[in-house]
Image (cartoon, rainbow, N blue to C red):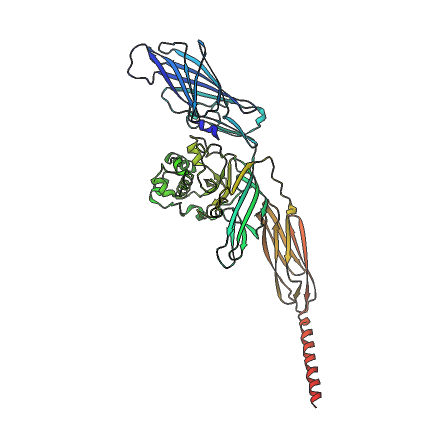
Amino acid sequence: MSRIIQIAAFVFTFFFIPLFRVEAAGGYFRADYDVQYDVAPGGKTIVTQTVQLTNKETNLYPKQYSIDIDTDQIRNVVARDPSGQITPQITQSDGKTHILLTFGTQVVGLGKTLSFTLRYEDLLIAQKNGRIWEVNIPGVSPDPDLGDYRVGLTVPPAFGDAAYVSPLPADGTHWDKAQMLTGGISAAYGTSQVFSVGLSYYLANSNVTPGYTEIALPPDTEYQHVFISAINPKPSNVREDRDGNWLARYDLSGGQKLNVSVSALVAVSPTPRAGYHQKRGDPSLYTGPDEYWESGDQEIAAAARSLHTPRAIYDYVVKTLSYDYARVNGQPIRKGAAEALKTPDQSVCMEFTDLFVALSRAAGIPAREVVGYAYTTNTKLRPLSLVADVLHSWPEYYDTGASRWIAVDPTWGKTTGGVDYFDKMDFDHIALAVHGVSSTLPYPAGFYRKPGSSGKDLDVSFTDRDLPVFSPGNLSAAVSFPSWVLSGTVAEGLVTIQNVSGLAAGNIAYSIQTEPHVFSASDTITRVPPLSELSVPITIRAPQILTIGRGRISVSVSGGEVNAYYTVEPVVILLIPIGFAVSMAIIAVWILFRKKT
């Protein structure tokens, strides 16, 4: 958000009048800060800086103090020193605010201290986005004159419980200088954010023969829960691939063109949600090289030898790469990890992600990429740098201890001046596709635009709607089996389990039993994607040649039951029409013979 642009922007300078001639201006004062942020219920934040300037020389005193704040949303500036109220000089331009104070008191002498307060209202420290209140307090830049720096924060009880506060206060109530030098404070209040998402896909079969294509729908992940509220036209099926993507299948005739529209609700949480686990699968799928993830490259392998943890890799990427805002203005071409190391100053989110993935894989840590939409009101601070409907990408690594994929965002860790996007995410990242088995597929929504068209294929907004709760009634079962079976033979059929809802179903238990002929099958399905179906083959043998009777197939899915019946006929029944036909043929021949004689 735009308020985060203040991070690392508090830089103070001193102007002083020497009592004696001096050769240099810096390092003559120590500045100690006590800064309090008081957030009002509507989000307006009162910032109160209490500053002590201590003389480090006997012959100098501070005359002026200036501060640059990287936002123009500053109001009602008030300052005081021991002489009384100070009239600040305020200039605002290019989205920044410059405040200059001229002191009315002269404090001279080694170790003497001038205390003053600066108070102003900041309209961007706290903002409500959707149902979440977010608070972002800027850090400070390193400065040789900076002494102690202590920060306090109060928020209204109406904000609710904190979803995260990063970092936690050093002493339980206040943050210290070391913390403020490494990126400031980021906090959010609420439980989950819900987005209303509209997607458009343009499909075309350029061949003369029929074919099919699959499009990626926003999937459930460790951090998001998805409800597909509408999809038109409906796909023939939806399947989940090895990366957890939901792939909707469309069968197209030769030369057919098709527009698909999707509406969805996406609930996003900054921490992995309970009850959901996306399995890693074969480790070799996530530790080997691939296009753009050149984990075998000599320079990448050399760097990875000293990086043994995901945290070390994250810190290395943030430190090594610099974000190139100029590339975003064009259509940035994905360079890959190896090229990112060669041109570190020309990086966008793709390079931050690719380098993290490649280094992780070179270090034997399973890693993959997420491509999606990230909500931001300040693209300089939290940039989006994929040209297709301005998307964003970030990496995930697999935590073997927690048995889950963990998302991080080194791009925003860099561009926000050090906000922690390793130990926690936020409410703003929506996954549209996950790349692990492949570094490029499947294509996310936003990459299916009709050639020559303009406008957006991706529309995202906040909503007060909640996702519905999955009902077992949304699961149905159907049996496809011959209505009669010949005794002594084997008959085959299918049981189809269908999820007719827009929510994925989890841990679905089913069982199939037949009688009197023995067949049984049962299993628990970890996940059934929305609008999908799966088929279970059934095989029944009627062993007795002369058996006559009726059989039953019973299917139980999540408490519901479906029955289908079939009739068993003996083999001898086939002799009846054969005998009749033979008899009729004999009679016909006899009649013909009589006529001739």
